Amino acid sequence: MKAPADGGGSGASTYTVQAGDNLSSIAVKFGVTVAQLQEWNDISNPDAIQIGQVLIVKAPADGGGSGASTYTVQAGDNLSSIAVKFGVTVAQLQEWNNISDPDAIQIGQVLRVKAPADGGGSGSSTYTVQAGDNLSSIALRFGVTVAQLQEWNNISDPNAIQIGQVLIVKAPTDGGGSGSSTYTVQAGDNLSSIAVKFGVTVAQLQEWNNISDPNAIQIGQVLIVKAPTDGGGSGSSTYTVQAGDNLSSIALRFGVTVAQLQEWNNISDPNAIQIGQVLIVG
Image 1 (cartoon, helix red, strand yellow):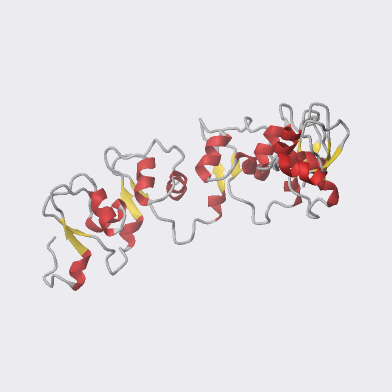
Image 2 (cartoon, rainbow, N blue to C red):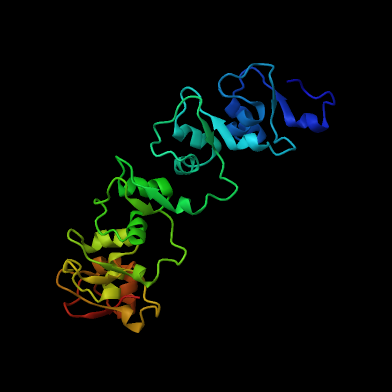
């Protein structure tokens, strides 16, 4: 490749490699990615550029053509490094190329590295469980939470998925329906784990379900796990002091400060609250 003869105009799209350059530093210099430089210059090994080599450093006017959508696996590649190179996720590469085992790609294999023009179709909403998978790894792969996978697939025990099981890995188009607002307590659950599962606080679960003792939930109990649509009413602003409570623990539970509790309840001594006392907590 030679630099254009006009030295300007289209010449602004090229750069001659200097001593000390590498593809990463050149990419940073021109505000592009290493993958783009490799694509525009047909470079398979980003460490193999030469001093004096003329590189295209801006997108060709034709937008790169269809070749920009594929990549040929090189020695030393893995799906993670290819994903990073093209600014996509491992899950996307697996989906676009029907790859079940991300460790099983082959040198010379041609991979699709951009989304198909049809957007991936409905198949992109499901995933078939593979050997070695768990709900946490699948959630991480698709950028969702374990709780969402459990909700969309009616899974009560996140450790009970089976190889070959087909899971919904994207939110259903109907938004999940009203059922997504409740959860049935399972063996081994506690209020803290349920709160984490649904991205809420223990205090909110206690408030929405009128639970005074967070350790007293029962297997089979149906809990509200999303804020009621009526906002909780005025009753949600009070709390009855229980044995073992202190103002600090109550403040922590409701996400307020001890000072606020003292102010709202005209309490001068924070150590003087009584069991059964009704406090304004918000």
